[in-house]
Length: 180
Ligand SMILES: C[S@@+](CC[C@H](N)C(=O)[O-])C[C@H]1O[C@@H](n2cnc3c(N)ncnc32)[C@H](O)[C@@H]1O
Image 1 (cartoon, rainbow, N blue to C red):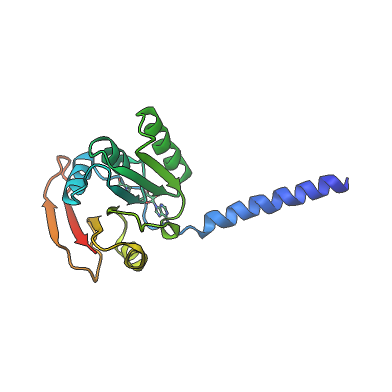
Image 2: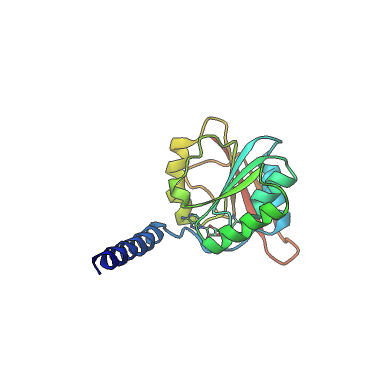
């Protein structure tokens, strides 16, 4: 009886702990994927080269990570806290045989180490860019490029801006390239 109570108590504590952890991740943007044509423009604007390290902050279905690894031959990491999106993107990476070049961390954008990055891609909300910016300022090495989709990094001066008036589906996009 005693043993059963201990097991139940530990299980409840574990469930509460997981719930608490999940609650602590702040949702910095809803899932809203970048069209593939724009993904390619982002990676080109970011001058991504083979074997460079790139991180997508909030990687959704993994499309930026996958194109970076497959088409640009980069070493690509995504960070995604949503369990379904993490699984979907991880499964796709496996099915494409890209595990050596692409991976998705299931976790919080705000809790990762980006010091090794040559390129960062970001498609979050303006207020979220304000939260991420100090972290990047602290961690990124000199020369790291950052490409932001649609929302600027306020306080930074873009080296280049690219405007796409119609992506084929009637959506316009603005891309910003920054260099630390
Ligand atoms: C606008 S979508 C962009 C998806 C992808 N980067 C793209 O451009 O197609 C933002 C993504 O960030 C994820 N996200 C939001 N807050 C997060 C956080 N704190 N940690 C990890 N992922 C987060 C969302 O679940 C969503 O998939």
